[in-house]
Length: 281
Image (cartoon, rainbow, N blue to C red; front, side, top):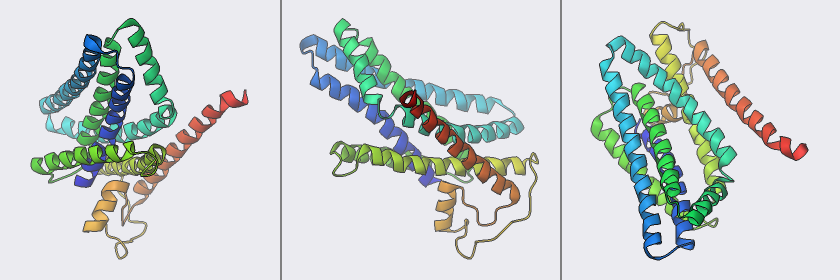
């Protein structure tokens, strides 16, 4: 569980840092100077603070809503959040594949228009939306992961979040050094694969929750690879938490794996075909 939390915080924080970095870098290169420059940066960091505030309000709303629900309905909500988190991971990968290459250009275009009219509320909005988006996604991811885990202490969660943020800051610093260390494109490709495997892990947990509730049937194990890698051991447990690996899967789990990955590859293939359409037109 700690590994899942660290990875999600790390990846989501880097995406937010990427947007903030682009905005801050543009302001540094196109510094209007004087009071205007100070106002632009105040709007930037005000937007960051507003984004954090929006994500915090969303987190409190989710927790408060869950507390008001009866225990049985709360279990259903947790299972729904697990599936929602898995779906959001797939959506996030697709969104970054679509916008990743043009994100910097799109942001800088908006900034140029804002600078021409001295409307620095655009800077505020871009920063706030970026942080609020990543923060809200993180809330859903963490809620879904914690809903599928047992025995996770508050201190462990806080430490994992802190480690994830520190890892994100260190990774961002390395990525800023340029392609000689780790190109942005390669970073996103590697992290996309890791994210999709984490999505499979959450989806598998959701299916197991449905089986535990009697909504889908249990089945006899189709095979047993515990002798090679047990999902109850230290290493196997980490692999299981990050990929959805099960040493003794039944047919329902197998169908879940097949359905998840078929959907992922189908969506990515459709996206690739859509991207080629304008070129072939």
